[in-house]
Length: 401
Ligand code: PLP
Image 1: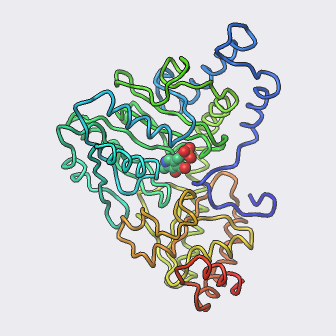
Image 2 (image 1 turned 180 degrees about the horizontal axis):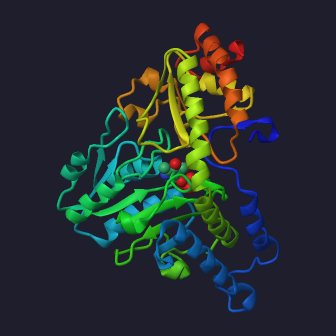
Image 3 (image 1 turned 60 degrees about the vertical axis):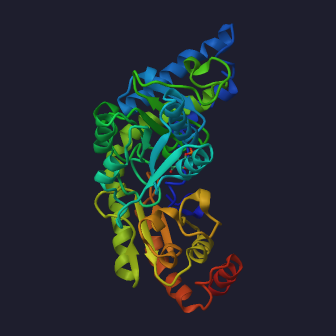
């Protein structure tokens, strides 16, 4: 949908809060604003609303509600899982993750290295996939945990996490998966998966930013990352964010209901957009594997174009898209994900991610397919648009516009 005259193609960065989700949460600001830990009914009756929401998010994963810990975000969930694996296994100081994880893992891994842990960042293939044998070879006797994402936020490429989970189990290492990009896009069932830990973030599927969860499989040893009050059965301190937890529960219900639409209508829109770009624009290539991929994501390299300049021009015509992840925009460093796939720095700096969602329409796609080719042609004809400095990029965008 082009709400307020813009066309939103950045659903992997964040999503619009669904009206149904907003409706569900508002009463918990306006009326039921108590503290669930209070002794009186006005506060403590909220516990049952929290537990109802916990059941809903557990249902999304086919988990037991007791396996769910609410957190502040996906980043906290990832950090918590790896931290717990190290704290509960003091003899194991090695962590395995991949070179294409979200910065939540990359930066935490670098922090752990400074703290004296050994961290292996596994490489990926040119299509973004992972060699399962490399995962197996990387696991040592002192490996506390392997953390590999389910779906990549920049390319949409999927890792075979069921297989990775089985390998970890066979070699006595815990397994965590960052599944932040998965709800509403793929079926999720932790019973089939066998992961010890799994992270979600609600703002990726139509709930507000600032609420997430960590699934901790029954019998997996756990240690809190945030100490405080006895909230979340002593597993995560901090007064519960009641309205957002309610929103999360409602969004989980909607994600299950929208799975079909995302895999039919949204997938068809993504395919139309991608095919349209690749056939109408010369020297444009897809980054990442075509098949083993989320249904909503398309990452395209435009040779001889600076992505930052392209994004500014798209912004001027009301199109929201991104290069790399929202967290690294502005750095002008080529994406670490594309770099790990062996994409050259020049090509990585000319790459754009389009991520669609439930509110996109065919009109959005047609609008972009109409306006993108002349914009690319203009940028390619403008000297300096492939410059490396932010200032030059901005000037080039201004002249080309
Ligand atoms: N992991 C992935 C794959 C993501 O795309 C994001 C998005 O920001 C995160 C983790 C972090 O989630 P949050 O923004 O809730 O911290």
